[in-house]
Structures are given as structure tokens and as C-alpha cells.
Image 1 (tube, rainbow, N blue to C red):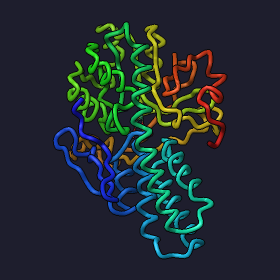
Image 2 (image 1 turned 45 degrees about the horizontal axis):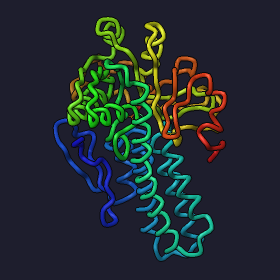
Image 3 (image 1 turned 135 degrees about the vertical axis):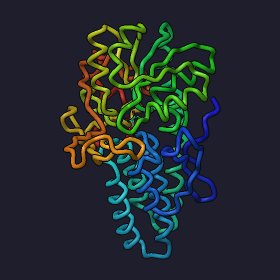
Length: 349
Ligand code: MRU
């Protein structure tokens, strides 16, 4: 796999691969302030649930350094403001909140500002490093499910650049390629932001995976005409009952999988579970600006003033999900009732 490292922490600098420039250019940008990190998340320069969590963790660590020299009480107040600021960047991917909470918990009982600053950086690095191992484990479990299958469909980009490495839904393709397994992947372009065509196609090409681009509206026909054998997607938030929020268009694919009798898999780390939410009804869905739909590459494609509905995610009911693949193992539909114990976390953790 020769995909550029998506997030780097070098000499106290957060450096990210600018996903808005892909696939045309490989450009790294240095994020120096919490505002830079906030902007990079909102404008999708860094995107994908685990990557958003990693970037936000580094963002909080960066912000803390700027409060050096304050009294401990004032430091905590400022850090809390920074936490709320970063938490307001995007609403759906729970990894953002999970990562920020993990850092905040770490410094609750510190005795000095310097101790807090060091702990925040250490925790952000730990989250980053853990994610790589997590994705590799997800990839291996996913590969075991897809082993006897060749033609697989996916949507959005749940790959290396959406994580520390390998990705979630794309991990079996990268790891499979390293092991000589030949997949034929059908990538939905993922209107309106085109994470499928710009990012997934590019990423899989880097790993020499056979990937074919289709528009989202071609999914049903492609499943029928090409004999797609399974669908695998990532996730932004999974409720306690297994209902899963992921990129808009995912629900369409889940319904198609049922119609055509093929398995529909969700691949996600246990940090994507939100056990404070009973069902998908409680998952906040981000709505993005109208221009994402009314323009293509800067050109207007709709009448001036067109009314637009632009939800960035949808929720797939757990009844349509064959299995959820985590780093701790594969959770089959019959076991969603035990999700709490299976993912090894309790509500709010
Ligand atoms: O809006 P995006 O590009 O951040 O949405 C990303 C997705 O929906 C991914 O499928 C999800 O975050 C999983 S990434 C491993």
C-alpha cells in the first residue's frame, strides 16, 4: 500500500493531507491553531469519523499549549471553551466527541498546567496510534467475511485517509491486496461531495485494487448486471440497537442489499458506537450548505435560489445490517441486543 500518511504529528505540528485537493494533488498543510483545525474539519480537508477524532484531539492539545503560563483554574476554563469550540465543528461522527472527552477526562485531576499539556499531547498521540491497529484488526475480520467473494460495492470513503491507516470499510481491500486477494470493487461516486470518486477510487488505485466508479443512481443496476456479492460501508455513529448513521446514500444501498439478497456489512471501530443513544432516531444528522448540490466544480447546475435539502448522512436501521465488523470481532444481527457487552463499553464511556 503506497498511500500517503493522512495525519502526522511532527515536532509539535499537526500536518494533514488536504483531502480537498485529492485526487489531483498531494498537498500537506500544517495546522497551527485550534481555528485551523476547526476549519479543516468543517471544510472536509480532514474527514471520516476516526480522522476527525484524531485531528480534534491534536487540536485540543495544540490549544492547550497556548494556555501555558495561566493558573490551573483559568487553564481548565479555557480548555473547556476550546473543547466546546471543536465539538461544534461537525455533529454526526461520534468519534469527534469521544476523542475530545477522552482528552478532557485525562486532565481532570492534574496538579499543574504543564502536566495537563503533556498529558493531552500524549493522549492524542495514543488515539492516533491505536487507530492504526484498530483498522488493521477490522480489515482482517472483514476479509474473513469477504473471503469467498470478489465483487463488492462501497460508498463514500471509509479508507486510509479517513483514519490513521487502512480505513474501516476499505481495510479488507488494502489488506487483501497485500495478501494477493483479487477484489473487484464498485465505488459509488457519493454525491454531492464525491468522496467515492475523488478519494476511494484514488485510494484503491494506489493499492492496485481493481476499482470501478459508478454514479450513485447506478447502484441497483450494477448489483444486478455485475453480480455484486456484498456491500460494505463505514459508519459515523452506531446507536445501542445497531442503527447506523453513515454517508448519505448508505440507506439506499442497504435496501438494495435486502432486495437482492446480498449481505450488507458495516465496518467501524467500537469508538463509533454511541451507547447513550438507544436508536438511530437520536442521531443528529448534519445538513450542509446548498452550494454542494447546486454547483459542480464551481459551475451552477440549478436555477438561482433553488430550494435544497442537503443532509450529509442517513441512518440505516439495524434490521438491514447483516453484521457490524469491529476491531473486537464481528457482531452478527442476532447479537445486536448485546451490543453493550460485545463492544466492551458502557453508555457515556
Ligand atoms: O462527510 P464525511 O466525508 O466525513 O463522511 C464520512 C463517512 O460517512 C464515512 O463513511 C465514515 O466517517 C467512516 S470513515 C472510516
